[in-house]
Length: 354
Image (tube, rainbow, N blue to C red; front, side):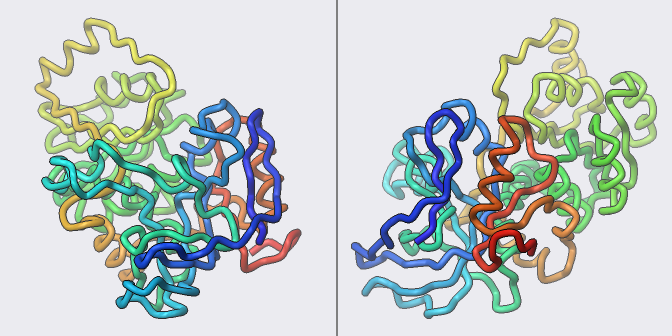
């Protein structure tokens, strides 16, 4: 079978690998159809950030059930499933409290083990989310990244009636913006330094947009003054500058949900730190996308949002290609962030865009 393999030093190759076999009673063999490149994969590819090499990445994938172990009785051959990549132990005290993301002994598909950027993968039944029949494979591959922001909204007590501000209009930010809009936000604001992303934000329903490369934090805060209460600020870019900006623009007693992962140290001035105290800000750390009964209410929310037609994915995808074209698109990043989602699609052939 074809597998997109990452070697140390940023080499992305398409290789033939053996077909994986079912070994445990709860195993499921999945034929992968669609898989997305995550921003967290870029350090693994280009900056020696993987746990081991060579590695097959892919934790945002969707496929069809091809074979099940003897203990799996709730999946049928041909069912469309989405990967739930976290593998908690289900035994530690954190797991007993349903704090899945804080499991002391977790594993993770596509990071601590080979992932779904290959034609077939075997995973335990608990790591598959059964999708409704009308779901498309592309939608299925977006369940994992979409539930990331839904988890933060869950931690914040929802976003209904709130002024939701998205700092960073990348894939996660644009998904968060659409989710917030559909879940009853009073208004949604997008902030970014890229005019094209801001234009896309408006197309996807943002009520307000601000370019933080052209406006100071004080100017943005002044522009939002009439909407300064009941704010939920979602920081999705994962840079020290955007975390600081989130604090500076936040209104009184705003909630700030930190979603983006930093790869450089955050150094706050005493005056910026003082704003956290003076404005009595509620800082919410958010890690992954699971809460309540496994895998979590976020995954059911994603089903409803797709069923309602609330999420536009077509504008978010830059590349949707077969293995070789996908590998070339990933290599071309050369360590830089994506400008639009790069998708691996086994249903198309090389040089044929989906």
